[in-house]
Image (tube, rainbow, N blue to C red; front, side):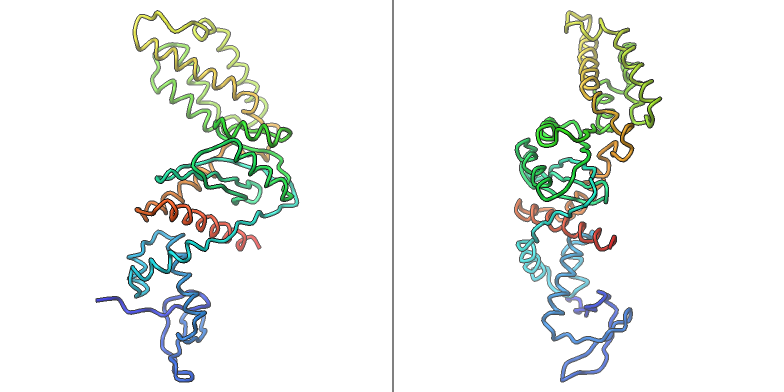
Length: 331
């Protein structure tokens, strides 16, 4: 037996409403939350209620079946309404900040080979721009950065992970801004290459150095770390520069190769690793974007079976609602 349709307050969205007389032959209802009276025959009210269910489906962890039980509408009817809303996603508008912004750029992938690249404004903590594509391409990121600059946004700094495409695009489109490499990515990648329990002395020392990267906060700690890194290379230079073989065992060859890879990664990232020490307002990591991606993927995982088009449209609506909520909160 289908659940009875519940009347939602068009003012506050509250479901606890009661019958409150009749008006011009139509049933009136009163909201227990805000006290407003309304009728159920107005098309604008019905449309607003449908859009509220759609917004709940996008932002809240509720499936169509659960919304069907709450609203009294069938799952097929809700699916038809939601499909119509998905196709009419809003056009994104770049929020122009008069002051300079600190930008974070990162990308993530979804099951249907959908790649989302987000440009986050760390000054006001919201998404500034985004692109849905099938890969992280330097030419597309350059185009996005130019679009952001031409809209009047002044970019002071850019924080990125180790993606070659993003780094190349930032160097081309924003050559004069402060470029910060995500220290969390650097530490994580180095420790994964060296492994948790290395055998050689060089690998153990380099792992300890990599583990200290995220603890650095000031000039003194930075200078000490760089001095220890140079001292490590001077001590183990023969180990790093030695060619790959012959070795006594496969374990030694593999560890030597991974230590060389970790050292090269640190050496190349060093010029842009500690920019946040000189510029305290520059974010050290892209952790905020990683958290944002985690919440988005957790929501979209509840709606398994979305086609590629629906997945892209879902992401667009999710970004729009989150951005809209942030703007309303800071008005």
